Image 1 (cartoon, helix red, strand yellow):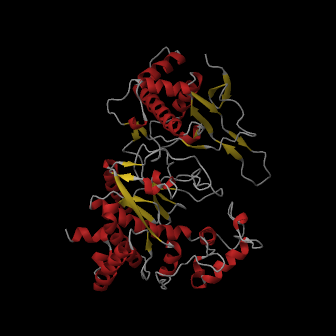
Image 2 (cartoon, rainbow, N blue to C red):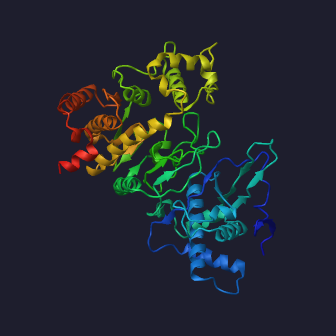
Length: 499
């Protein structure tokens, strides 16, 4: 018999009922994924065993209805597979899930309809009671000042050695876990309510445009699913050089169970955001060159200074490719230039009240300089695009860079070339460098025309040689663009028209 405390309508095991507040906030966590699946269509007898143990623990006198059995089985598989995936990569990380009945009311495109309130509570109780997992119950602290939002955490759970050993005895490995084909790839988020945390996922009605985006992403993902994308050796531990992915939409680099991309739109609008996300984006820049695509070494080309260049291009004043928009006198070193990039991004996404330095930036400033002085220097340098600064317009630019990325990915997929996007850079097998470079230049011009800008010449860097860069640039910009053929300017349309 399970002993514990009451949470809502469910009996919570004592090990779950411990207070998660105080020193242990359990922020080293991520939301549970409900779309894990076994790659073997025959399944794994491990789940027959767990289902039998669950039924024995409950001591039911009557068998569940067919639909209820389906719900419990789907919930059991979702929890166990995601617990194992995380334990294989980071045993200390927790999975966050809700034990609130209201969370599971109504259907949503982001959650398996078989995942419902009662199975979630009973399955987690079972896993913890059987010592397959350890858990902490969530809480909601309303003892805040009047007018402030209550503070809280969802319940957390993570695998124990007992579950890992059981999976090993049934020969279930990371390669045996994938992502369900029906998993949603077009995500829409509400506006942020808390700084640094993404807005809640919200449902939406499909349109011709969302269906088109999903179909396009399906073609890209179908190619990535057939590609062998590997990186020798394990990913290193979190450090100062690796950006934290807590609370972001980027998959963790240690979770390589699927090479699928998904897109995320923001502020409840399909005109804001729309970037592509895959697990490789969590790698350090120094780690990405170690990637192999179909056992071939890779090359990464990126649009240098993409967002400031887009601001100028969309304002009808394209920058010369030799101009560095992040070059501020006194900030010429690579480390200080990175501060300028952070400052520009803050101005692009902030308001007139934006003054506070991002975490870790103040101590990197030159002696005697304040963060506000750096922001003022950036604004002075970029007076021609002042309409873009302090207006929270960053997500508008993300919509443009995502459109450019989508054109590149779609065209290369049509050519059978797997491509890994990292927002403003793109990774392909080294032998496809020329095609990637040409496509990036064409996509830039085609999409900026579509958005009403003056494209100019973007700065693409990362080439294997200056000669190749010059050859590709002259060929594309010196002939194709001068002819003014709109079908050549937008590869995603042009290749179909040319057959």
